[in-house]
Amino acid sequence: MRLILLGVFLNAIAQLLLKVGMSNAGTLGFSLAELPQTVMRVFINYHVIGGLACYVVSVCVWLVVLSKVDVSYAYPMISLGYIFAAVMAHIFFHETLSPMRIAGIAVICVGVYCISRT
Image (cartoon, rainbow, N blue to C red; front, side, top):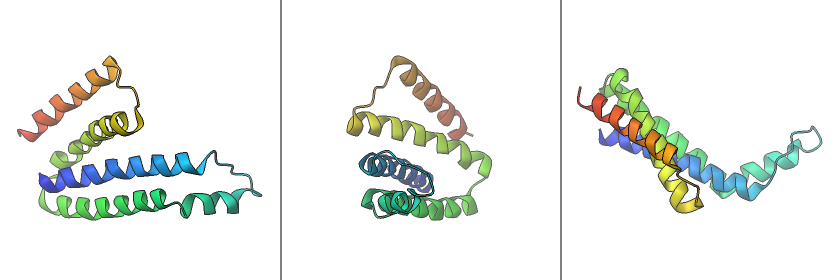
């Protein structure tokens, strides 16, 4: 279970780092003329690089997880990433956690609890 949580947590951290990196990069243009500048702005950004690195590590952790447990048990645990990301976005980016989002998080928690008991 610890490896599953580590993989999910790394994935959520990756999302947050990518958000910071893309916020710093500004609005991206994808015209042919802007493509080289866009690629440079994105891929020399330390937050983006860190986010991608977290993804790579989380995939490696996930491969270990899948070698040990049933995918029908492990895969639903990925939904914990929604909870981690929402809470961390609220803390670090001051994003709103509306009552409906909190209710959704509660439903995810109940679902994960049910799956983890099997």
